[in-house]
Image (cartoon, rainbow, N blue to C red):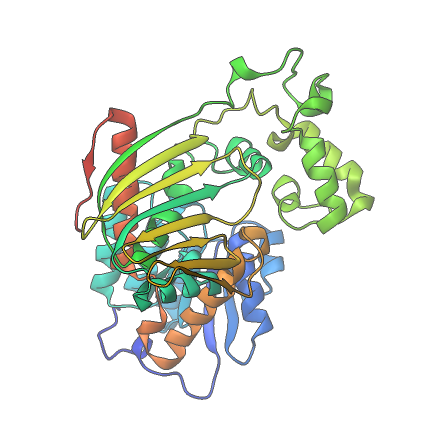
Length: 434
């Protein structure tokens, strides 16, 4: 049932909204669902597939299935797709099978990153969707932000001259790292993927996108430095609620989650801790979740193994260099970037871009209308533009609206795998062209 180049997936859809199916109704999937529900003239959520009844209810789709295989079976039985496109927002290790099967069934696909936890599986996904001929987008949301548009506009204008180097920081944030990468779903490589892939593939992809250069060679260093048993404070217990050292610990679960419950109710990060707390009145529910669940564990006595700091040095096509730093030990804020050129430099902080022109020694500050630096607040507008672009591509048949297609995304994944080989073996690694 693979689409040909003249299939319905490439043909404008006249007179009706684009039909979207959602596979995986977690935080990311529900974010995309919210945009769909807010734009009924453009898209409709016709199907949700998730094993959790409460998650399916939150998605508010017209039809519900417990598994993507049921969606596929219903497609085969009915003889036609139940949607025009599918958003696959399952966990990292659960992307490959649904993406390939649903693409073969003729569905356009938008999938969360990373594509898969191994290089072979990433290649299989890209080869599979290209063979199926369907529109395919990867959720590299940083490509879609107004801030990125501004940075790329400056770079492409030529005002910086020849790009010679780039320095890019991903400040994960001390509490965000503790939540997602010590206590949360991305804490272990065998459950998700290496940090440079699970989190920082956004950044490697962004560096290639804004510079227009391919990452050719990498060298990387990094480790799990702090969140280890030997760094636990004296008197530390296995859980925060029973710990004498908790009041002085920056990674205290009560310090993170009780204020978050009062501030945002049941939204992220509380929805990871418990599905049953909706506001301050549910503090006892949150307390029980912290007492019995993994989000109340001591960060020094958890089962995490992903790095908490990493540096990747890169040689880009054309001879430019780039350095990327990921650190857990920062405030949780926008990425910080400096780009160096033969005629000027650029400094960006996610909200503004400062440009200095060597030719007349002038400095300009360009402001961007952006807010939010993480998944909880829409990635600086990237989440909404991403799903809107995918829907527009399906509605118009114009795939150019998709900025993060299979070939580009594979490049950033290959760079991440090369960085991990370098980090583990102390080598300088060449990034395959394809």
